[in-house]
Image (cartoon, rainbow, N blue to C red; front, side, top):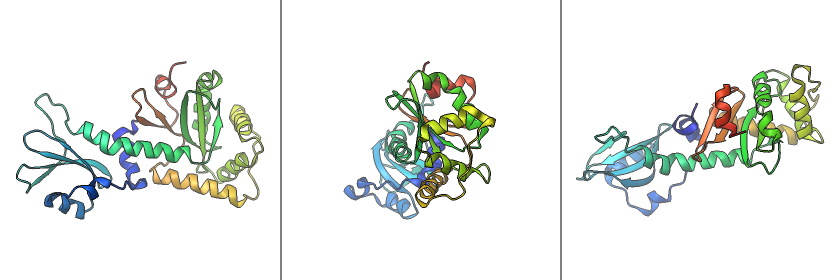
Length: 255
């Protein structure tokens, strides 16, 4: 599943982009009217045949508005040329989706995660991970060649959603003196893991779990693993669940 366009629509509610554009430029009356109805104008762009394009966030979507030459009417939606190419895609990518993707990545970077692999690995992959999730364990196993070669660092954003013991087991990993080693041993053991849930979760660790769960909720996620990575074009993408073998190269890069 591509994050670009699809996931980012769900992530819009997370990020309140403050548009200096709207403050710096006086908007035409029809665009102002749409803004009053909830559209957030984040930029403008050139369009053919006397139209003026405006990129906006509206009802959990990036959307293009086109102001007619008379300045009195607005057409909403995608604009196509004679070849069937979407002329709205590039402006929305640049003005709406790219800034949002950057913000989402920063949110994950500053979340509470446990690293798996070299800190100097050239590629980083984030995943929301539950200690009781068999598909998280599957992806952990799939990723071994990339992680062990030093090419990828997995960053497990620990949550507790699978079962009653999940939060306390995630807390046990955070509480360990060597969380990276504890996570490695737990995942390597699979169903034979001896990881024990904490009887009492300290407030600071509970705060980490709560923050991770809030981030997961804000991103519109409901299952683990939810995997995030940058593709070869530098675009943020999402994979829900353990990936098919043919997807591993896209997520983790070349072996």
